[in-house]
Length: 79
Image 1 (cartoon, one colour):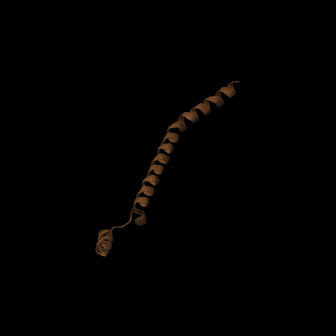
Image 2: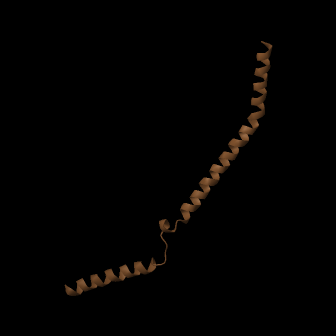
């Protein structure tokens, strides 16, 4: 019984030390923060693109809006 217990304990220590040795230098995914920074940069870039597209749309609509406003003023003057 003692030999069986000793073999069990020895194998447990062997497995745990092998596991620890294989994972000693591996960085944790959450600890590095690199993925979070990449994600934040991508999100910021997407926001900037969206804002630029919105600005372009407004710039395209501005002449039409101004023409419509002028037409309304001309119509009011006629009345």
